[in-house]
Every structure is written in C-alpha cells, then in structure tokens.
Image (cartoon, rainbow, N blue to C red; front, top):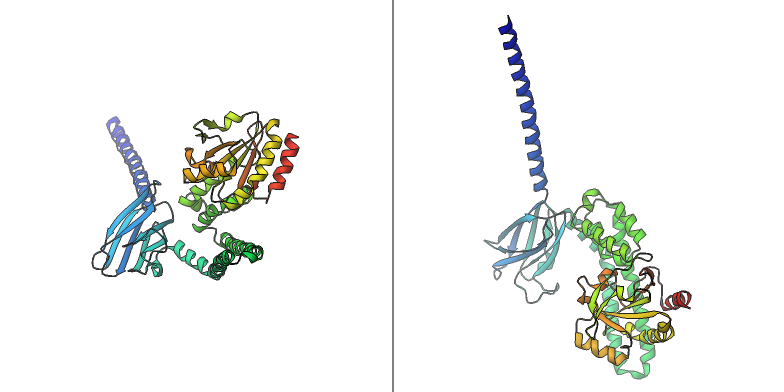
Length: 406
C-alpha cells in the first residue's frame, strides 16, 4: 500500500519536473530567436548591377551600427556586386567607382539611403547620378521630396549665376558700383527666401510622415536655425523606432548641445592657447562680462562689424567687458595677419578648432558673424546675428550691454 502511494507520488513529481523543464526550454528558445531577430533587424544587404568596362571595384562608405565609419571595397564580377553589414536604421551611404576628385559632382559618385534590409542599386559608369535604387523606403521618400523642391533649386542656380555676373560687372564698372551692390543685396535676400521655402517643405514632411527616417535627418540639418522649443516639439512627434536610429540619436545629441548653449544656461567651458601662446579658458574671465565674437578672415560682414566691436570694447572694457575673438579660420598665417591689419589685437584671439570639441559647435554656431554674451556668473545672456534664432542684431547687443554694464 505505502509502496504504491510513493510510486504514484514519484511519477507525479517527474511529470511536474518535465513540465517545468519544457517551460524553461521554451523561454530560452524564444529569447534566442527574439535576439536573433533583433540582430537581423540591423543587417543590410546591397546587391547591385554595374554597366561599364573600366571599373573593377566600388567603394562603399557608411556609418555602421556601432557608430564607426566603414569603408568597404566591393569587387565587380560579371557586372554584379554585393555587400552586407549592420546599420542602425536608415543610413546615408556613399558609393563610388573610378573617381577623379572627391567632389559630389564627380560622375562616379552617388549618395543614397540604405536600410537594414535588402537594398538594390543599378549603376552606370560615368553616370552614377542616374542610379536606380530599390528596396529602401527612405531613399524613395528622399527622391519624392527632392523632386518637389527641384524647381526651387533651379531658381537658386539662376540667381547664383546672376550674382556671379554682377560681381564681375562691378569690377569693370566702378561708376556703377553702388547700384550693382544694391542689386546683389536684393538677389541675396531673394536667395534666402527660396532656401527658406525648401526648409519649410522638408520640415513639413514630418507632419505627414512621422515614421520616416528623413525627419531626424533634416531636423539635424536645420537644427542650428530652429529654436529649442520648436526642435523639442518636432522631436516628440517622431516614432520611437526613428528616435533610436542613427539620425534620431544624432539629433538628440545636437539638442543637448543646443540646450547647453541656450540663453539662461551656463556657458560651455573651453581651454585653448591664444595668439600669444597663453592658455585661455572661459573660467579665466569669471567675474567679468565676456563677448564671444565668432568670425573668420574671409568673412566680409565679420570685418565690417570690427569698428563696432572696437567702440564697445573702448566703452565697456574698464567696466568689466572682455571680448574674445573665436576664429574658424583654417589658415593660421592669414588669420594672424588679418588681426594685425584690422587692429583688433587689443583683445584676446583664439581658434575654434584648437579646442577638443570645436568652440563653434559647443555654442551651436554655424553661419558667421555670430556673437554670444556671457555674464559675470558664466551664464549666457544674449545671442546675436547668426547666433540668434530671434533675429537679434548689433543694436540689440548695444542695448543689452548698456542695461547690464552701465
């Protein structure tokens, strides 16, 4: 009787153990296949057909899923080629054949968006710009969007050609210089209007395509000209999958930089040598007002503002204002010569590129001239000209200095 009871209990226990064992195996197997599926979601394949006889291999350059820039050499065999790798969402890649220059105008260079899926491309030697891409939804969207703004680009090209013609005319007709310059200024404003229309068209794409990888791509491209509130609002509309792709991550990082360089926040520090070899950091000027002047020797509007800066320096230096010229020049000799020629060596001058992270990037500066005003506590209190998204100009700078220092 007891032996039968214990035998039935043992058999029942074994069945329970088998059941639990099967559940554990099922969970492990599910996780394994899920992980494999996740890995495959990052994998891309690029299959292509090539028409031409003088090109033996292609070079494919892109940023992989680990954020490394990869350059693959792809052999062409019987007019076909193949490449594979891992990317984080849609990525803009560059493919090139036998080139004469690194310019995008080279007939054997083409940029396109690859996705982590099967991509196909057809290329013709010396005519890469007419490449046919399929399999990448992002590339399809890009082509539709760019076709919609093509008429605007055509108009921009016409206006640029007219500006070049007028600049040559100005040299040959000194008597009409002022009239020609006024016409050039008018064309420049018209150019800016067309560029703004292209920007609006691209950003409007977000409203109807919230799941497109193009959204963070273009938001990042235009981020320096958008307010933090606008960027934040547009970013929040993005699909989570898009936010976690390469361009979503880049956009998030750019927004962090912009936030740190916004009025009311502590100014990012930097440590570089000035033109005399002295170590200069923002912390060195603690307790003083600091005006960062982002400029370059080749920037005519920057040089035109130097007389205004000299006047402000003479007026407020003894009251606690320091000016720090932050150049984005790449030619050091020309930069130093321009400082002497302009007579602006009365204040410190440093080069943006000498810092670990370029200073103009720390302060979200791209076009110049641009000015950033920092108070005695090291906080940003004003941004002007190209540094401003509110169209603050030199008159606003004068007004703020008067209210802060006088």
